Image (tube, rainbow, N blue to C red; front, side, top):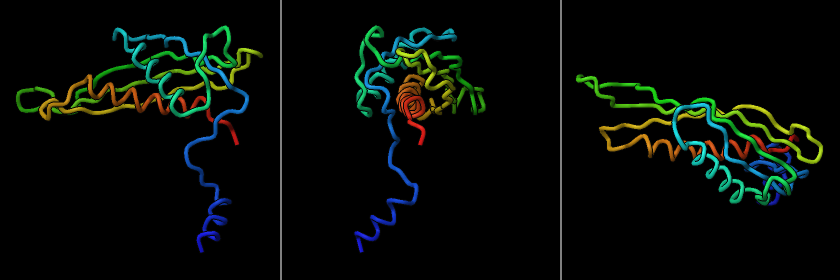
Length: 156
């Protein structure tokens, strides 16, 4: 019974995780550019992306001069939006929104392997003791995972 279940599931198109690119072994990730007025968020996001690459892919992070591929990022939007206020106009629920433009370049050929945006957001509630910094940290971890999955996924 178990064997037939495994055989049936093997051809159904389901996959766990994502398929990494076979044409890349080393990657350089310079600090992302930041078009917003929020200081140093590009450093935090870049650190999260590097950690995600090291944790979930076979790629080795190297200097750009030795890399097969270069992952460039630009934070084009980071903003906070008050979603709900109490009777005294104090925010009770706030959303943080992040948009990152990405480009994965093959350093050997100069070809663009991926180009696109990753958008994500998270909410926090000050009355519940949550802070923007906590929401930002959670958002950056999740966005880093999406960035790596999106930029490095091999087409089937």
